[in-house]
Length: 405
Image 1: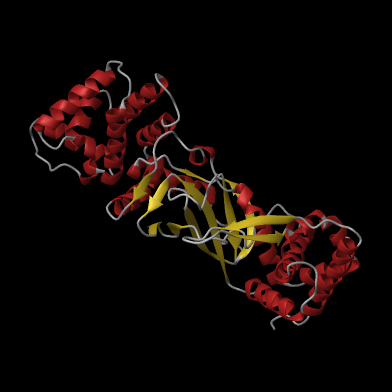
Image 2: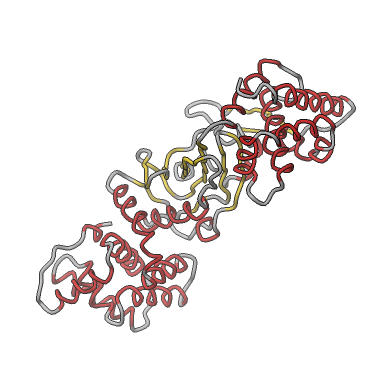
């Protein structure tokens, strides 16, 4: 035990809260339950009623905070530097010190204990385990942050690490309801039951004590863009992501709207051929911040996924122009055409598109492949210079692998 001076005060607060909350239930209080379905392959579905003790406790936070045992515990926690660092890491810098200490340490321990007990029937062993986990997190030099966002519109051949800390993997039944019994109502329709609605993006960060995690919503939105570009899937994440810090619930945040909205189209599959390309594309998306033309092209292409004609075609023409300039039909044909006849055919299609024709499926795919090729080149200016040399007959160059995506 690292903090014997904290143990009796925290135990007293949790035990006293159990007495108060248990008495309220005995007097007719209503503890809500979540109805959770566990789908099994090749077998019947199993159903479980899980008490929503977190919601029940959080609704009574003002009453619990006003208790004398809570005041004494907060006073002692205020003298503990590690508790202050821990509290602000979990509650954020805007919360006052007392508020952060109460919510993250006291309320967090109470919720963990109630969830372990399935209600408010006290169990000494459950408290010892909950307190030991709190101490290991409280005095740890590092924090582990995890955000999980459900995906719709894609299936997997196997789990894949798209970037350091960013993994796409199959959903594990119960992994969210362990911390959030009400999570079923926050997931996409039929999630976990359909092949193209059974994956999650998991974003992990190892943090030093006191450091704030990066914006998981923005990181997941970039991963969604990379997967859309690579697979052409009608893909969406969210609508919310679930955050934990040191294995404890940290929050539920909305995913950015552009990533959370599912565009029209068909689902797709991330296979062993596309996975390394998705890794390249995601790594290259960070370069777009320093290249206004590439950033504009990416924004317009992604917006076009949700638009109808003639607005979709206008967005795609503007995207190609931002990528390659006014001569984009010629440059794009040289980039993506494998030989002279293929380039001639593609150039004719793009000239017609530049002249006002609607964006049909081949044009949509051409714009996507062009973006992937530019991102994989990692230097748009050098790529355009290379294309112009080929147009002048000064250099021959093998087609990029991205042309096959």
